[in-house]
Length: 39
Image (cartoon, rainbow, N blue to C red; front, side):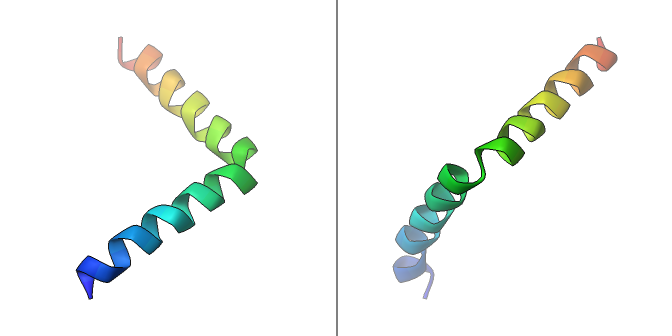
């Protein structure tokens, strides 16, 4: 199961990133904010 689902999971995540770039950018921005506050 894991062997056959890894490629499809990667494909699905790539499609999700393509469709949801705004959310991805928001996550990256939040992580950058956390880095700044930690420092």
